[in-house]
Length: 257
Ligand code: MG
Ligand code: MG
Image (cartoon, rainbow, N blue to C red; front, side, top):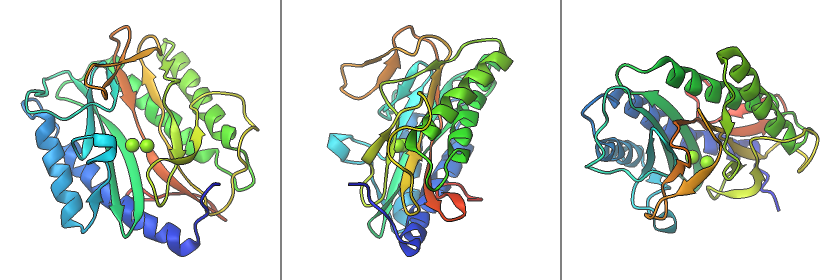
């Protein structure tokens, strides 16, 4: 049931991934106090459409925008808005997806707004490190939860270094990706290694840890989308789409692969 891509098809996914990478890079540069999340969304949609691609989030189960913009205690799935204007000291995560020639790319970054607090910077760094550890754990003929375990271990290790215990959000996780954005298998961001689907050349997965400065528990707001931490602590989210090749992971949404 898990989609296997040929080398050419992974290369086509790389095309979609580069569109997402470009949009995220432009939005990262545009983040500053006074900018609204709706402006970031417009920048993303324009960048994606200029590249001949389609924003995959727009209309996805009724989602109204091309990015998810999740500020501070918002974890994921925040809806961009004119009224949400970024302020100095905010922490925003931006999630973006594009379809090019039928193939999907999906990635997210966390960006400090203006002067960031040290705890926020460490939170974001820990989350990014957890994502990178998950990517590095990919082995053809390894198992899916090798990735999960590497993500959790890196998050715990970063927490010890930073003198805190990060919350690892459990209700959401990574996923298979290819001709659709969300495909089998679901990829938890925690757990023991050596279980689940056997990883094979030609699979593609989105690896996307979400960490918090407090409890891992989340709630969904009345808008039906925005996920927030139950305790109001800040959250970070990083994501890359990764193809599995004979030579190991191919980070399809990273500018430098
Ligand atoms: Mg995403
Ligand atoms: Mg995703």
